[in-house]
Image 1: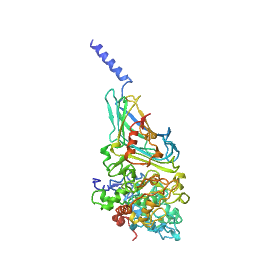
Image 2: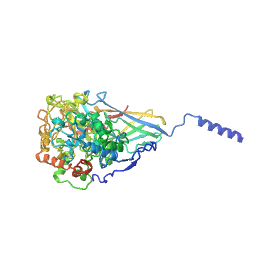
Image 3: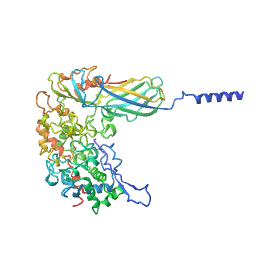
Image 4: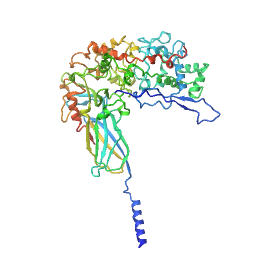
Length: 371
Length: 239
């Protein structure tokens, strides 16, 4: 038995936000909603007290997510680089901003973000509310000042009313833009993959997928003949995502030697121990989000598995769980290798494909409302 | 005569109600935990500590479960058992256990376990400190890691940077600990301080010479069992 409880249904409640204001200032009631997440996701994480989830807020956030006016020349929206059918990535190594500007990080997949603690590959943002405003302003992304963004939305014929419905005021400001985008992003829950149905005992995995799952969730120890792929040391639990506590979910996964390390988390903490560490992302829908790594250097999952199996580059901050992982007795002077067999690598990839969630990438609630 | 009796009764009544020896029914008890290594407070990703076998060691992660906390009073037979008692203690995370208001007694022993008992260790539908989404859940077959220590050390034979990864769990390595308490007075707010000494994972009774081990990833097998023997005494003690 793994997990047999039914999906936790979202509880809907109606709350009149104006309940303590006078009758002369009537505001339409907002409809509070809760995240529709399975009960095997961490239950303890509360929504931010100052940004509860409402139907109106999520609706506004969805509009803003796909709003091209939020880029300097009106050519792109958040949804341009975070496309639903690719699990909110764009299939490119680096994304193109306005005026053909090129970024230098791979667009991250967006799912189950409520259970993530730090955002961006280098962890520089501590909340979705804060994170969501950055790409609007970034010169090589949407390149629009927040003042201009506020002005455009305030002048638009539909947005003041949508802000009124969501926040009780038709005054647009940056904080409310961030809050609405964060609300929409929190609803992007992926929890209907084959892996989820396996957790709920609704389906069986194929023998290959089952082997892949076991390898995924096992750190190898050759002295007791325990074979493992070492994946879940960083991609934890049912979410297959990095640890959400502080910066514990950031690791140097052996992409480069010391001289070539991209600073990553070091830029944020200035701690030399954080050199070359990046966020361990959720692997949900990983089959749809190529290319891989913070710099999109690997085109396929096969290349990713080859990297972890036989091309780890040693450096001063290489994660000890990678340094110390092998399916054969470690010779300290030999290069670091995981020593998985070819069919074990293939099994792990087969398991990774069970993380693909068709419902997530076709859910109309997440789609572009302007289409 | 009747009046005298009445007077005496009133006198006694007055005496008891004015007494400051009256013990409240409940007392507040908190347990604080200090993680030490090489006689210093443990910090992650910074200072280097000396392992008992002499190597310089930089810890990256230190987490363990304290569970099934119980206080007993051996002279009166009274006891308090914390319900749903599972605490994931970690450097950089939780370092105290608040028992809240509990029945008053002059407790003279604290009992607790290192690890997660067999019943809780066989389930994944748990919340709080046993949330299986944390990095303490091993996988669906083997339950929780009980004690996790990760870090890097300099191998004294090869002089190379190497990883030291201890993940000790499985039911046979669940250990019940009993420690004497002194100075706990019924009814008084009490702070019990436990000291956890990382060095004790590697010594007493089994000495683990880290640089000599064939593998310094210890996740089961003989060495994990030896570490469990080590943590069953002297690893967590009352300060």
